[in-house]
Picture 1 (cartoon, rainbow, N blue to C red):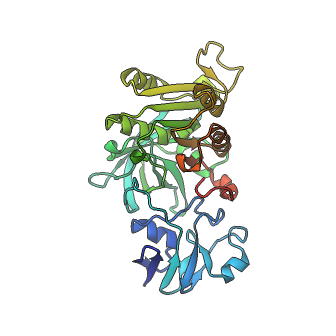
Picture 2 (picture 1 turned 90 degrees about the vertical axis):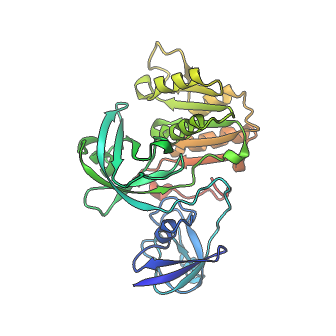
Picture 3 (picture 1 turned 135 degrees about the vertical axis):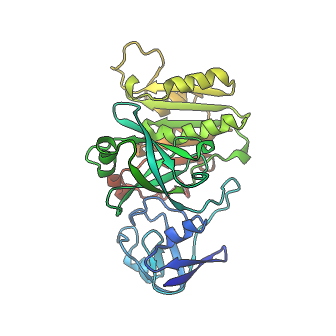
Length: 354
């Protein structure tokens, strides 16, 4: 059985299968609805029902209060249709966003490499002819054994390599998904993933110098973006500030040094935050936001900033950028949340998109 879902203010109507969530149906139809945790905990995907009924599913009473349910609101990531439905969603126009419907992909693990003591590089060759079409900066959901759970991982390879995508996966202590990847997944294994997801992509139409700040495996999205921009002949200046605790956690270091040597419009600034580690290190020391502040003399005006990494790093970077007079419209983020982090993924009431 299927139902009709009308999404305002777009005025578009799509088919939704019984038991399928509003968010999943919309993304598979190429319609982006704002979302974050996808577990009914953060309220980013809250929409207004104007006609029809839903089953609220696993929506948290903190993210969707009883009074909001009575007022006709629901969380798109959890809500399933009980009949034909009309909703109003907060959808912004993004001139640089491509319309890429979410699809399921099967593939085989073609390579696994230890990039650092805690991060594995996993390459997946996709069965689909032509591979996956995606924008640099987007992510996929990798299905875990059993098929009932999945985990989100950003794509580290550029869109030109769409037939074989690369994921950089950090081991999360006690994490089911990352433990499986690090301890059990092997070359030749069959896997299923879904994508592309996300609105973390380069706003090329802005035609401004770009600052990328990454921490840990958060390097994956900026790497995809930078490789794509340089291959496409981007003329704006690109700066990558990449932070790690110690030298052995700093991966793709030689690749970025080589890119900086070849491209006059690309600067690479690696930084180590553990002051006591790697006595022979001659590069920058400190946290990524501190190193960025020093690099730009606390003046970030005129830039477009792209931040990718753990939540604490993102928050510190946002504060630093704003102190240096760069504001929300020019700051774009991708927080790396573990499954355990999802409950703390609430959006700030001070910002529309951060």
